[in-house]
Length: 307
Length: 272
Image 1 (cartoon, rainbow over the protein chains, first blue to last red):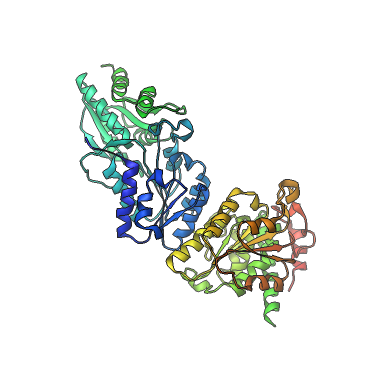
Image 2 (cartoon, each protein chain N blue to C red):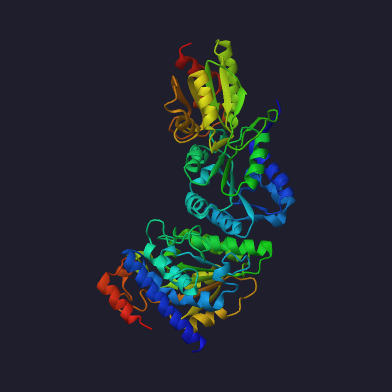
């Protein structure tokens, strides 16, 4: 299967969506070569603003620019969401300014740069902010859809992208706030988001070999969350698992939990980063270290539902 | 009455408004509001262009960002005096469902161009406005008032670097230099050092005003034509609590409301 890093898809999407909408400007904090906004910079140099290594300033500059009718997309590493969080909160979300955040290198598959650079908390930080829409696309096609939707939404939007090349799936219908059934099943459901989908699908295959029919449901939108679809599959499958390349605290797992609590769930298990920081290593080794490869996910699930 | 006297009278009214608001609410920041009142009046009644309470979203209006957002009573007092809303709004200053929030809120208060209060952010937002104005060909000028205590925030200097880098001559940063902050004088808490030299080193065209509470001096500075390609930085040497004898130069009146008796005395001192 063809692979592409979704950060690359983000850069390409900015160029494409930027061609249709002149109000879009792109800001970066000296990471254009890594967040891939340099694709936009090359195409539209007059609409690209480097803010230097000053993420907080970038966010508030974007806030100010948005008041002039522009649609600024800010980019940096997802791990730096923490260092400009006050600006995202008070500078952008509080006044509901029309600023977009395309933050890359999320999760442990960032790899060798290590725990200091592996964002495992960004979804939690973004979910809790009023007015914020939160996207965690799972492949290149969804990234394009998220960027396109972000430009159309009036208000702040967060898009989580990643460094590691990941499969490009056949394009799926996209509606903001709606989850996608990737694979139907009846014994258990695996709710997921982002590029870990590759390993979740692998887990579903492994479960099939064990005689477990697992449904896989992916959410490109973490907020507003598709409570209805989560409830539907909880009712159908009873055993609920969430799989994410993020802390099990505050991310997709908690979005699902909020949706289904009190609605007849038999078992509920959050698979993800178990409240620890990451470390340096090759992405594949890190996934294994933290129990996020397909076979490991399948094992966890099989053990839980006792088959 | 000539212009300067009219402006001085407006400033007197704004100071009355500040006292009324803060004493009614029993909370707020009178000291740093009184110190920047003259600058606000100069801006809203003389300097800023296309300012119209009946058309507060005119895209070509000059913009103002109160980066030291805790001086909200001074901004509200000025906007009220300018006709954006009536004095009855003072009743709900800092109260439930009021438009006059503890810190300026663009979603609630007419005439407010940015929500501020988290220090350091306003100047950065103002830089973004100036950059966005240039990008869109908007002829407006962007003004922001920052505090001296606020200047301890790193973001103030990040924003300053960007203002110079992008040659934002459509931006004026005004420093309300009253020398005091919550825990003491600037020098007791965290010295600013030679702020004039620092601003110059960051690439600003710097003007220093000896008495930032003297309307004529403030006007002269604000009307000095901008230097092409450079953001402007005006240092207003002001007096914290200006206009109310027992508040002047007192650290203790940073975030404290006067009681009824004190408010009455203050209003007496500020009579027309």
